[in-house]
Length: 60
Image 1: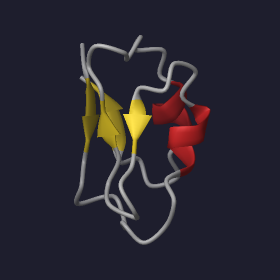
Image 2: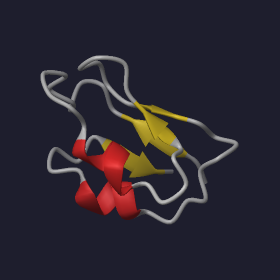
Image 3: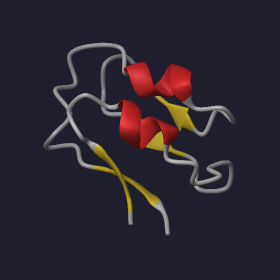
């Protein structure tokens, strides 16, 4: 299982709220671009997936 970012579902016009929710800092964002997941840091807890209001983050 791995964290995927669906860029087509992410409006990319704001600071991603899920970045702040990640307990291990596995999500990062440059400007207002879609967030990027660091596979090595991600513990697959799903907090960011549940928090994203646009359902742009998925664990697959």
